[in-house]
Length: 248
Image (spheres, rainbow, N blue to C red):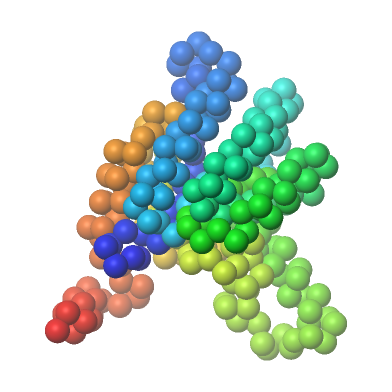
């Protein structure tokens, strides 16, 4: 949490693009394109409010089960958005991270991801994390595999494995854990997103479909966060006493 009470890290599942299009008798891809416009507005707001990290769930490892035509269109949209937006991100001092199993993507998209991350890697403003072909269970599994390989190679001992070691091998290594999780579209579940990282995160659900989500609704979610007491296992009285001692 920042000095002004804002969350340092906001994580969002951008749900409802397809349903938004269906309500308007349009193809689902139109909803996804409208959702990209919402992403721009949310990023702009986070930059203005000096949010440190914004993580967006763009494409889950389970989304491959969708109709092949829709998946192909999503890949094209992802590629096109990267090409059109990376210069703007760079100009606005935004650093881009793509997390997930990128080996499943076409070579051309993998190359574009590497190029976009490299172009923005020295930026010091908002960290924009895009989860693509990502799953929380996959993230934990790949971390365990890396740690196991180090133990096997004699680089570390099994008894050295701790929560911090696991954190250091997740795709979000080096970033603060999410303070606020938002899901649009009316569903109230985390759908395999950042399973390890969301352990102490505050949740906010809205029935608003993602293309209709806007900066006002994001501000509402942040204000809801500010009015909550985060105890992390302590009692409410302990938190109040701690705050009072800091203010003295």
